[in-house]
Amino acid sequence: MTNETEPRQRECQKLIICTLSFSPIIIMAICFAVWRPILVPFPLQVVKMLALHISDDNQRRLDNELRLLEAEWKLYEMEKQFGQQRCNKNEDRSGKDVSWLTVMVSDGFVVPALVLGHSIQTFSCHKTMIALISGNVSKDTQKALQSVGWETRLVEEMDCNWMDAKVGGDRNSGLFGRPLGHRIKGTHTRFYAWNFTEFTKIIYVDADYILMTNIDELFQITEHFAAVPCSRPGVLDLCFNAGLLVIKPDLKTYQRIMKLWRETTEKDTCPNDQVLLNDFYTPGGWKAIPYAYNIRRFVFRPLKSFHYACCRPQKPWIGECRPSRKEAKAFAGPIITVFDMALVFWRNLYEALQKYELEDWWRSTSFFRPTQEFPIASNYTCRLND
Ligand SMILES: *[C@@H]1O[C@H](CO)[C@@H](O)[C@H](O)[C@H]1NC(C)=O
Ligand SMILES: *[C@@H]1O[C@H](CO)[C@@H](O)[C@H](O)[C@H]1NC(C)=O
Ligand SMILES: *[C@@H]1O[C@H](CO)[C@@H](O)[C@H](O)[C@H]1NC(C)=O
Image 1: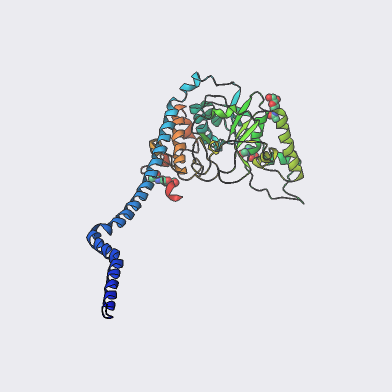
Image 2: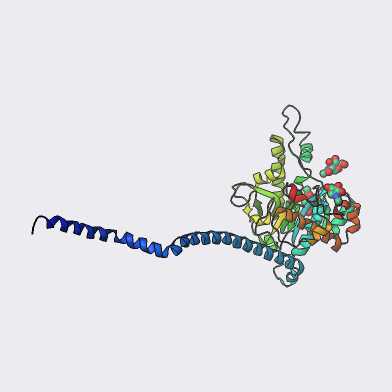
């Protein structure tokens, strides 16, 4: 071999190696050129499909939730209509010696008490319903309460003013005066519940509470005292709300509660009834029952009850805005927001007025607002105002 042929050979080898090493790229380039119409749109398509799928999925989830709420409403309507039929068959009407109990110290809470009474009559198999009333409750109000099944019992109303008078004078003035704070009249009257030893079990509920289903299982609680925590699940708050109390009446307990109330007032200032009861039943001293039994301020599931406490929605019978009778009657679920609960309230009230023949009484009260109840045009703007 001469020296001339060697470089040529080498160059040739280089070219082959080069060509070979670039061949995948070349092949790919060819492939790309051929398959381009598919290769570029395909990933785009996938991304688009995924996005669509995610939004569809969300919509499907919402639709699903709505179906569940509609089913809940249907069940509510069915139980309203047929729920009482199971009461007679049910052997577990264990004891006629249990009672519902509420308290009323003025005519102001008669409207919710009628709605509550109607809901108990509709859903509960236990028909003993006692309303403790003070001397301030008018005869007409008493009659209205009795027509939905409340047995009215006259008691002396109890609250901080009452206790202040007992322990000698106004505890909030003078040298060691403390601010009066926000005092609600008659709130301590519920303490009488512990003295009702003629019953083995009492469910005390505030008058602004409504049953959405049968909750008679609460009468079966074996513990001496049960209530619902102050806050909804997930929010830590160690106290209980006094709007629903499951009580085993007991004279000794009644006396001890009254003693603690008196001693605390003498030593310091009069505690409100909920604070006092929470103090009495120290953490761990009461049975916590599910939030579903005392739902307040927002809609929670399962919706076993609703307590029109505080401000959301505004107490329906007090609030400025009110649905017309037609709107309330036409409400056909499902319950999505607390404002729907206001509609449920009115719907039940109008049902009760009809069922228990209270229309004349209703029209004679200061609660009757004909321009809103029978308006020329719809006037229910509560949802918008919130
Ligand atoms: C009941 O009436 C008395 C006398 O009219 C009054 O002093 C008291 O504040 C009233 N109580 C309630 C809860 O309205
Ligand atoms: C407690 O109940 C008893 C018997 O039922 C009754 O005589 C008494 O007056 C009640 N006490 C109070 C403070 O209501
Ligand atoms: C709407 O409600 C208000 C009170 O909030 C009332 O004064 C007014 O007359 C009502 N309008 C109609 C058309 O009924």
